[in-house]
Image 1 (tube, rainbow, N blue to C red):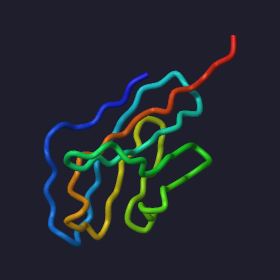
Image 2 (image 1 turned 90 degrees about the vertical axis):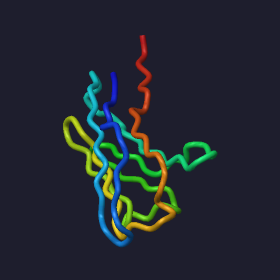
Image 3 (image 1 turned 90 degrees about the horizontal axis):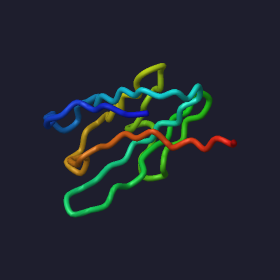
Length: 101
């Protein structure tokens, strides 16, 4: 399993909307995708989780501004009404799955 994110910086003006890409490959039939935000000298903070039947955002990342729609191979993150405080590195990740033996 793996995720692929475009490299390089993204620039946009305050108040605008950006979409950050994230594609994934997995053998799971029900993948769970996560997005994290990491500010300079900070640690990654959980933003949101997307599952085929569930959408969950951390309290500080309101869905009105931070949203992601999962499809078969991608889960792009859309950030609306950009603020200076949104400047950070954003990571997407696949939640590990546990299988019984």
